[in-house]
Length: 310
Image 1 (tube, rainbow, N blue to C red):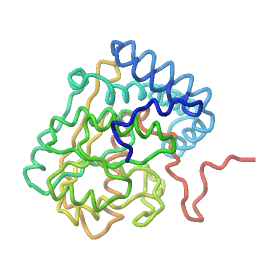
Image 2: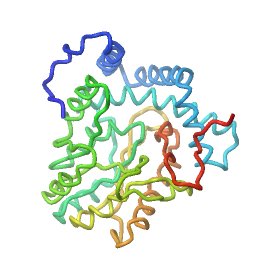
Image 3: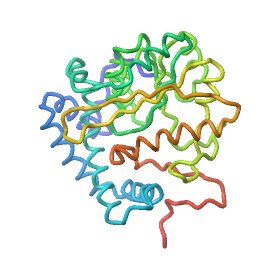
Image 4: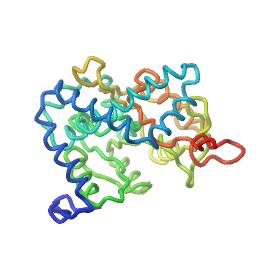
């Protein structure tokens, strides 16, 4: 993990100039009124929709698989709106990392806090099942006042400057960050009655990965949530955040504990978790991360949905 006090000036080299532009953008946008910030973010997203063709192709394929009931024109409108959400996410990440925490909390309504409080009273820790919505970097700061100890996993990126920014930014709200797949550290935190934000919704082809339906389509998925809950006795709650359609703020929803969870069937348990996620995504489909290759790496005879036709 990079040191949080590492000076960014050591990255003042041509290889990091684009990252510096992003950093300065993030530092500046937090001073804008929310309405202006959203307008700038949407326009950024429209630009990204034009220039990021490979990501646009991935989003189109994901939406075609997950929303076959929509017409091509409707899916295109959804994809365009999704890229606006991606543009907005940069400013929302900046608010979580560099913005005023009291202002951020004023903008966020949290529903279901009683579920979190009840789970903490049980004393076995809480797994907050979350996902990669475009608002997810915003989640932590809104959640922190309700957690005696908040933890999350991280995945280092190839860009070292970005890693320093990420660790420093998330460290504003998260008490402990675990390296990706550090199950031992996660179990230890849960046994200390910590709250662990956990997002197992991305493609996963390692140990404990299994084919689990996502929007009815088989996808390689991490089944560790069930296993860790069984090891620790932790309560599993959903935690998803969305942006209000009118741009007035944000809503975070904490779900009730999963009943009869976990069982001995990891795949059945994980299917329940993915169904809960899909139900929330259907309500705010533009705000989920569709530019990730969620259906990559599936065994034959399942097709590669991202392969471009000749």
